[in-house]
Image 1 (cartoon, rainbow, N blue to C red):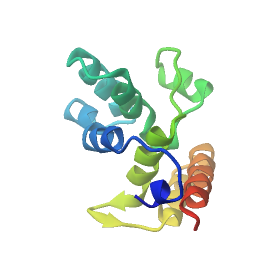
Image 2 (image 1 turned 90 degrees about the vertical axis):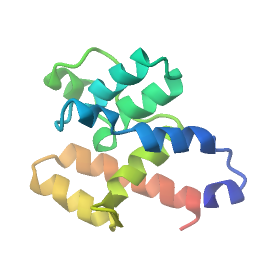
Image 3 (image 1 turned 180 degrees about the horizontal axis):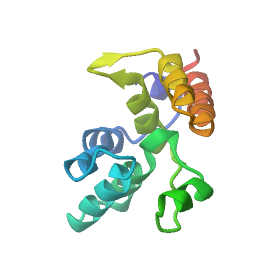
Length: 135
């Protein structure tokens, strides 16, 4: 992985498992709540907390406590904090219909839907990952 080649430690197995399971909550709902539903499924299945956090924190580039409260979610952290969480969240924003899309497509989509805060978070996540990649 390009980030590792720059001397940055990444748990690739965790990224792989998180990437495979991040949308498991879509088996219950296709709303923004799929992150919460997925985290509950993963916890019930005995998945490690690191995987549960990826599932819970991947949606929309992460959410602030105020946004989570508006959704009626329990108090918790809903923004990716570890590098592995950020990689899965960022990757989720870059793939659409099995194609890699420029991050600006997702940012413009979020802005058009009235989600300016989320668009800015995704932009910052893009900048952080791009810097780690040396782009």
